[in-house]
Length: 572
Image (cartoon, rainbow, N blue to C red; front, side):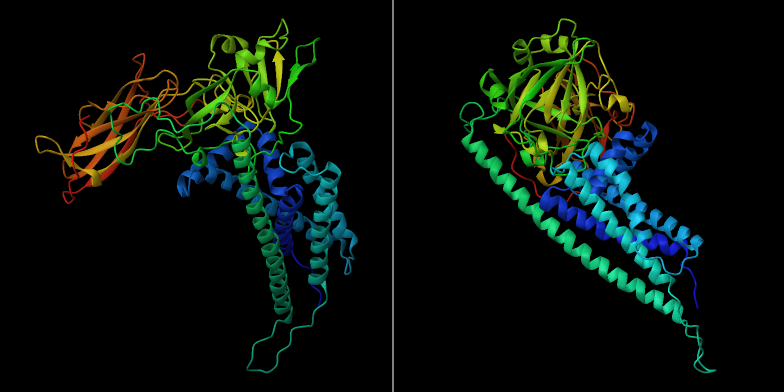
């Protein structure tokens, strides 16, 4: 009996064999800095798909992140992107296997040999070679080695698919009936089922070994990078000696409500959003690094100057300040917002040492991840706070957060502020940056926001009159525009003023607190803020795209009358 396997078998075999291919690719990525196929595929798609498809994809990731919310949003989003890249590779493998089986059935060959499978592997490798050579940002291996690596991976995969087709096409015994009382034994079905089990077991073994070794290497590399960064931070001074000094607002009498986030975000918890699939950041060695200044003005193209990282650290007055930054994709009350101490050189001072072309009006700043954004020279000239940053929390930037350099521009979302900066071009006129070209807001000025972090029922206390009060607290932020007022509303009643703790700097969030007179039951708490110039926070609900989310944050909770009063806090 001879029955050709259908397209369903081709899709199954092609998809299943793609899984160990991914695992071995990951092992090569960790062991020898060779390309990891899903990363390169996803990064290529993110840069080349039409804007409507990118919008759908990004919205899908945001919905997934909001639904699962395991850990912080930036890490969850990166995991979702990586998973999508893996699933797309598996899907491509399944589609290729499907068409291969259909074609081979049409050729009516009983013995295929290795050639058709090898041809399939070569053809499948070609688009992945395009992805890698176009946008590879993670692998440090020589391009020729990358080509050989990807070619070998897909050749083996293609041979596997071809072998599976040949095996499934082999003649099988005609089904027989052992007796009148027993059903027909379908040897054909049993044999194919056994074959599938064998293939599944083999691919599972290879996948576990490849992915397991890759994960072990990944953890080892991360530990080595952490040790190296700590050693660099202790050996290479980044400004004056660090002392445990109190924050500038330490004397403010407003005590944050228990459960309110820290005024300063721990470095390890600072959000990170970028356009790369690799969750470990971009590794740009300091040795040999130079920041290139070039002219892109027609008729005047060419290099202008270059600076090492030490030039920027040592030749310009260091400036430091605490800065809150948010992603334009941050939802109302989302966690893609953080505050930390930045240190760097004034961009104005840096440009003063460069021969700026006479016709230049803007800079295009390029990151090592191929991200770009423009900034007007007038902005830099008129705002000394624009910073070419090289340190956070008095330590060199990590590879996850933009080492060696990133820029800070006050009052703008993170999408306008490149990191891993390698090149700066002078432009004659403005041009759209990476996310603007993909439909996001041209200006990207931060929207004011206020958030309820805590309704601290477990910290209820009695005031001087004997009334029970429950602390409520959170943050309010309006870029560099400041916060003049924070108000809270309970169950749709009147808005009442909250206490505002002084901001750490003119560019950080304010913590606020409201001590609510306890009333048992189910309650809805809302918050809003007023900017420093009197502008009210926008209450109309809008999504993150294209200009940033707006709307009021609300929390609904049940407050019971059974709790232990804590001692009254200091007078506020």
